[in-house]
Image 1: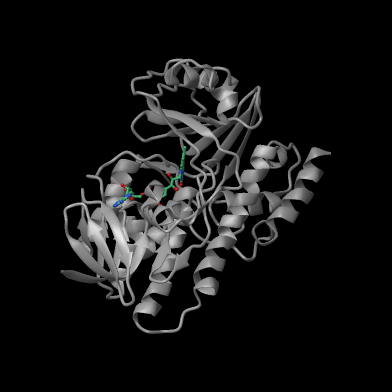
Image 2: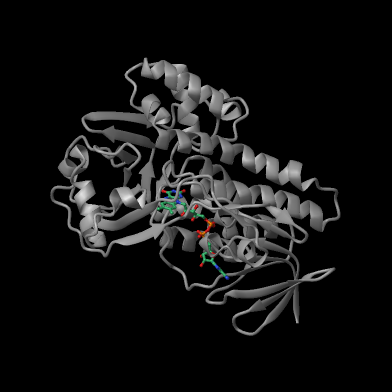
Length: 402
Ligand SMILES: Cc1cc2nc3c(=O)[nH]c(=O)nc-3n(C[C@H](O)[C@H](O)[C@H](O)COP(=O)(O)OP(=O)(O)OC[C@H]3O[C@@H](n4cnc5c(N)ncnc54)[C@H](O)[C@@H]3O)c2cc1C
């Protein structure tokens, strides 16, 4: 029977980053992934804060070499209004640009880099069951193998292996929503259209329904609509529903007039998730296997990577017999950023943050601080829009609404 220090469930961004960071510190890691890569997963617009962690994991050169679509900001449109944030013009230090990526390829690059660094990865093998014993965890794999691990890192994303197994799931505070999305040949020929930014568009009829348009570097883009199902499901086919809403939005209608809809539309619903606890005896939860908020500000991969970085730091300490306060060193730092993002996600759907985004009032200092949050620096203790996010957004939204 094989024994390892850490068994990582899943080779998405959180799994590949934690595996690489642990391996760099001499920890014996086995990463088990149930799919063959590349596999499809949604979540294609990265935030610049990811680049700091990709760099630390030793993945950045390979990502930069691939030729993904460069991304330098986020643009917003509502009816005839258009606003944008340039991520280099932010208050936090760190990278100001990133990429828009086809996740199948991106995730494969990351895990291949981890393998090159010496991480042991098994593909097309699922973790089927786990038994928590006194000194180790016995893990049953789908190929019949049994592995003994001192620690389990659950990076299984939407698989949520440990939250299900250990009854850790609690309902998310966010209202359940549904997304309809696909990839299209966009054929956008508007000369001033900026492919370097994600375009987030508010639905002209429902302020709590929105679209993403994420251009890739090959003339294609990802397009999706998100909202409560009762608002967006017209009863037609998934493709008709998506097209119906897209062509109601003036800017998308103009941009995508010549688009070729050549790929089946997918849907995902009730994806906001939460858990009772982020760690326990011999386990820790990362990325989407812990809490997932909402796609609106593309925070998912960044949160997954930050959780992987924090988890690797505490695990190295645990496995080298140093004292660790999991609450102070893992839960609180991780939740600080998640809770900042939560403020802006909730503010987006209740309209407060949209009042800020679409305001005509210009204040450069405030815009740079908001821009930092949108660039993924929600953990920046020097930014009042991160440290006192609820209060700061309330005050700002009232001011912008005047
Ligand atoms: C509609 C929508 C749009 C989104 N858009 C964005 C965006 O633009 N930008 C962004 O940053 N985020 C976005 N997200 C969020 C993003 O998809 C996730 O936050 C991100 O993929 C989480 O990474 P992860 O490593 O935690 O999990 P995942 O990327 O889901 O990886 C988990 C891996 O675990 C494997 N696995 C599962 N079960 C098992 C098992 N039993 N055994 C072995 N392996 C297993 C899976 O096969 C998978 O490869 C979006 C989410 C939604 C719902």
